[in-house]
Length: 161
Image (cartoon, rainbow, N blue to C red; front, top):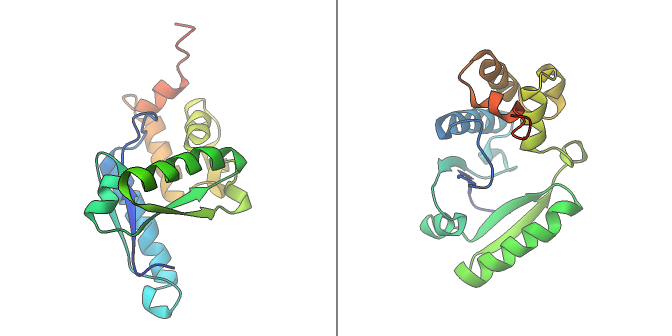
């Protein structure tokens, strides 16, 4: 579908990040490298992929790297309205198109908020193996073992304090 793909890791001020930029880059690069080992771009099944981080608006990053489109995933019908609003805004404000890919059924109702809550409240992180990669499960275990981890903050009930 594309000549090349950039997996862009940004900051969403509406969502508190559990992993730092460096951690997110490392995990994503590991996963991309594993995928490319299984199906290299020159095997006819894909394109070159790189992982980059950015700050600011996604459309500004897309223009900066010369992207022709932003590829976004849609998990379920709840995502459609929000994603369409973003896509139309990006087209009108920045002349950048959006292409949507619908996720597989296994991930249709998975969200980072749910994953963080399960881990923060002591849920069995190994049971998340069908939802997240082994690298993420290992990182969640590390966060749970660290008393300074921000993961503990996801379990605190602000109204109860």
